[in-house]
Image (tube, rainbow, N blue to C red; front, side, top):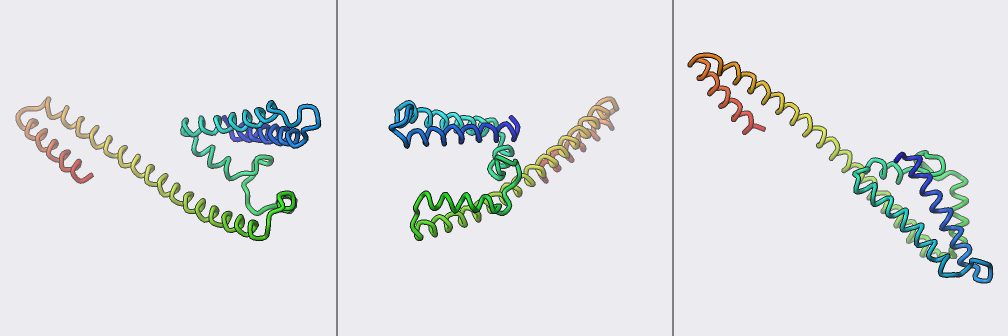
Length: 180
């Protein structure tokens, strides 16, 4: 699944849920306020959560991290809220009729989330560097073992002197393994 496909799934889910919630809020209209409409909301949300869980289980962490940091309509990273985005946020705040204290609590939570997200991203980068370093060490160790095996093969075809070299190589290999 690509980032664009994941974003399209998310946008469809949001549109379907928004429409269903709009109908649910109008019980006097056909299809409004019914259990079927509520089931539609639950199904759409569950389906998208299942998709995210599946991607997580498939180790598509990079895709999920990128998805979480973009605007799904433009596929561009969230930098600063655009004026249009700020207008949407202001409109939403008016619709929710939050008190000043609730708005401040949300702002504090968003700030805390930003700090936690930055720390998590930094830790992830450090872990990626550590994994890359471990992979390089493992590759070097495999090359060392291959060289030792080649030397051992050459030593077995030689005389008693070759046998002594083989024993020396094994000791060196053991010392290398202890150092690593």
